[in-house]
Image 1: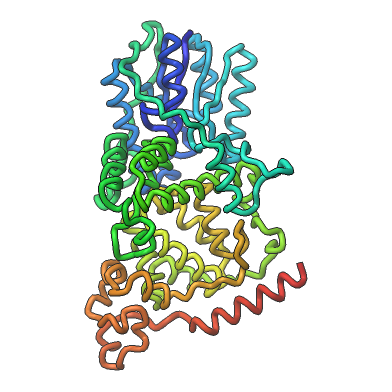
Image 2: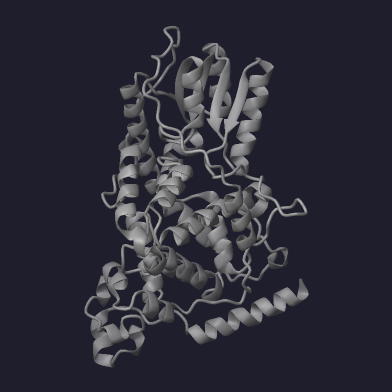
Length: 466
């Protein structure tokens, strides 16, 4: 059996890789990565600077791991829908093996490729791996998709398979001697018009395993207590590894379950939230363009380019919101609590369309994942899948005082407030006039109480008509 194993950017590892394990067990193996211009054209890559840097790191790591096992990663440029069927025919492959994607554009790509391969008699087999359970497989008693997380989480946890993650192959066969392709080196950042950002996490399977080990040895134990603290390293920082598949979600689930402790339950629940977002997008692909709650269709979002620019640049006068904006651009990551506060502020204080924020975050996040980013933004805007009412509005001052009590998070990312006393760090506008004059920090872009009232009145009126 001659198998092409198509690595596709969400499975950049050799451990717990179903397609690779099956191909190695079956005979000849051809590892392939396609430099599709959908992502790798320089003008596209420049819109994804942080994800692209992590991806290239991970690709280089994968290339080295495959070489260590005795094989070679073939990197071929071109549109996947054209390149993959052509190479399968040219290489006389019996089958093409890959991991499934949940995004609608990935599903359409796979449909077109399956159709082309079918005409040539080449099997195209998709494996699960991005999620714990196959998308669409966790259903209500009536056979539909869950619309609320808690019952979904219970149903999902009850169905998880007991099989351990797959080990990496001990060795791989060399490439078949007759396999020839116009391969290219993995691009460098400079080839794509990008500069390296030293603040970003390093990509790759080894770096991912090191992050997992560090989490198990440290933050996991206090995860339930510290995960919302913006000033503490209380989270796993594994989100980019899960997005690019340098670790599989099964590996993380198994490692945390085996470790146990008081923090394991809260963390595993977060993995189930991740699962929920992917199942939602599988069930309703239109979520990438439309609100989950139909009543929010046609919502009268404001148009205010100046307010959006202030939000993206961290000049709103609300320290936590501004710290989140600057952290995003600087290191491609934002603490989850800060993400929620910043997203709520955009949609409910500024009343700007949540899709603007979704696109901005997807551009700059290293862990930018379509399903999770969309679910988080819709949840924050009140139009998503959430058991709580749409009228929940985060108070950015109260959130800062609770989850960044000494202002360490704010002072790190908003250095003009470094000299501000703790009593005023989350509301510097209330500092004495002499101190305010020295801080060089803008007044709040709008009053919290007025913004809250405006959104509630607008939403109530709109939903009454829906």
